[in-house]
Image (tube, rainbow, N blue to C red; front, side, top):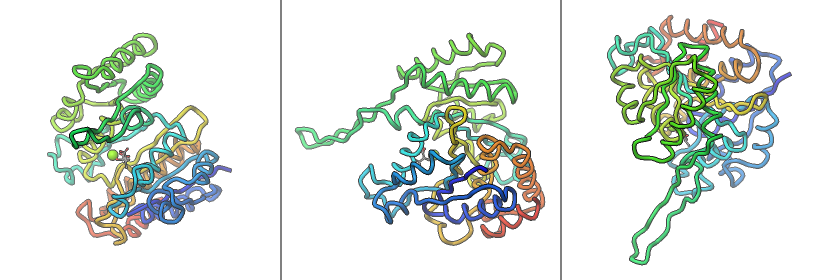
Length: 350
Ligand code: IPM
Ligand code: MG
């Protein structure tokens, strides 16, 4: 018996997670579903965005699925108490260093993208984002006040050989099961960490993955190429910060950020962390109109990568595709379905 820990969190998180629960109860009745406090909601109730108990339960689960964290309510909380700090703390505690962010354009939604249909139709990209290192975690980091009264802020971008290598491996392995092409993105032209990134990826490729086509691309160029000709990409391998930015950008190619799931994986056998890539969307929270598909597809990824139920993942993916084919649309996709009705539409196809 496997355990899924749901962390609904803030904003639209609880609304979309409720639809995940319905789908999970239907598809995997034997799955034990637990729920825990997380993010701003946890800060309000327990004084911390990630409690020791939630952390321990996450490490003991087979998979963790998070809704969303953050919102204007906690904007002035001290940095270590902010909802986002809870998420970073959870990623670090679970050691989920490889973040898989697929950007897939469902055919009936090709017209929902702000880009032309021919640019995005058939798009299928996998972004592999390093998730537990880089500037998100690098030390030192601080804001200080200088003698002349102005302030000075420092963040540190830092990567080691092994951090680059382990996420690189995930990208190359992923590519072998796809179109065998990895584009590695950094800023080797201005950053030492970019130089090392390129050096380590090149060496790893030569040593173990020479059968995969490897291309290096500067991250700014990649941002441009993603909207110019996104179908040139198969797997994009990149660091924590560039991956954050490029994955938001890629989401718009697919029609809506409300569609995109993600999986964060660590060493084999350890629990994965699954999150829709959209945020807490405070502007629409509580209205019951958020698109639950990204969260439902995050559960699909959990079935595939942590719960050993690839056949059920396939069935769920097909059900989502059929629901979209049949015209099910929440407001972000130009439709009028509520969150619950979108859940109904997926359930009806299961
Ligand atoms: C994401 C989010 C997070 C990140 C935030 C909420 C900390 O934007 O998962 O992409 O920056 O990693
Ligand atoms: Mg982001």
